[in-house]
Amino acid sequence: MGVETTVQLPLLDLRAEIRADTVDASKRTVDLVFSTGSPVLRYDWNAGERYYETLSLEPTAIRLNRLNTTGQLFDSHNTEEIRRVLGVVER
Image (tube, rainbow, N blue to C red):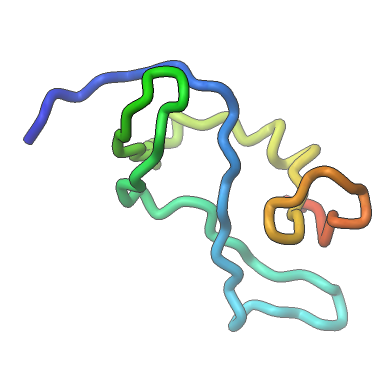
C-alpha cells in the first residue's frame, strides 16, 4: 500500500445514497448514507493531481453538530438556488 497523507482541502460536495426502503411518506422522511468509508477518486485542482479520498468512520473523526443542525439535501448538488433544496437533515 502507498503512503498515507492528510491534506487540508476546501469543502467538497458530499453525495448521499437514498435508502428507498426507509421512505416514510406520511412523515416525509428517508434515511441517507453519506459515507461507507470506501475510497473515492478525487481531483485536487490546486496541485493538478488525482488522489483517493477515504473518509474515516471513527466516531471521533466527524463532528455531526453542523450537519445535524444545518445539513441540506440539494437537487443534483445544485446549490445556486433555494428552490434546489429538497430537504434538510433531522436527527
